[in-house]
Amino acid sequence: MRFEVSQVLDAMERRLSTDPALAAAVLDVAEMMYCADLDGGAGRPANLLRLGLVIDALARQVGEEQVLAYCVVDKSLLSNQDLTSNERMVMRRWADDGLVEVVPGAAPRVTEVSELAGLPVISRVLPATWAPLPGTGGAVLNPRNTIPHGPSQVGQRMMNRWWKCPDPECGGFGPMRRASGQPVPRLRAAQPSCPRHEAPLKDAGPRPPQQVLAVRVDGVIRTRFVVNAAAPLVVGRAPENGLVLGHWLNEDALAQVSRSHLSLSLGPQGITVTDQSMNGTTVRLGGAADGELALSKGAHRLLGPSDVIELHPGVEIGRLGALSSTRPVDAASVVGEAPTMIFRSS
Image (cartoon, rainbow, N blue to C red; front, side, top):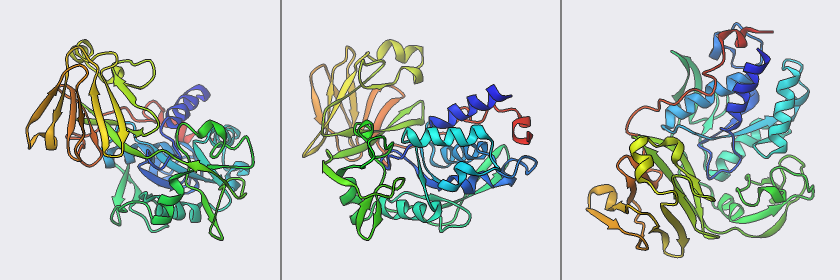
């Protein structure tokens, strides 16, 4: 049983991020853990696995197979006796790795992240975009308010900078986070501060501009990713350093999509796609409404707002909004392998 719970927690770990560019929503972990009705109400008062049920519901709601959630953990949970020692240890590890935030007072922080970064909120008690409710086959997200339109001006200014925490081991604002994005700083008297260590952050310089794109394979958004101005991003079947698509491709696509199929670079005018493949790349202009452009090896094209890049039929890249799932997400649940008895164990 312990091994099975660990497997589920590992699956959940891959759906956590404090990078607001990649997360699809922000939530208070404590609130989710105490929603006992999500698993029938027969288990412990608090259960970390209920977070997995909510992440599953988020994936179905937004139509993204590998959806990421921005999770805020109230510091009191780390000593909460309603939880197992393993759950408390796992949350500490997630915080040390920069995957979740541990803060004193999670609910106000959830609201702050939403306002600064423009992320939807999942909650029953806070003003929220969606409320988690029990449903057939798992949790569902009940719409409450509209999705935020984007980050605030203050939030955007802060997210355009790199920040450094005085604690060199900080998982959110330490050196190891520089390549993968940073959380939203907490504002204390208009001063950007570390949410976990409650210390003023040092401005470490401008962050490269970035844009978020998504991968759609066989009609389902598999993941979202960031292209930034610091360096081109290589995409293909299995690039040495870049975005790997191979695990989503069928046999025919594996044979046609090159190991390093194309590169994406962000400049002052926008994203440029450059073909590096053996079989070429198609850019569907305006998503197909305005025709198609075939790129051969070495050819490049500035990506329009609604353009869709096709590496192979059914293997596509585009901006979120211009690209969405055309069929329900059918990915395995992050708690799909958890036996019912896990939720009912003491």
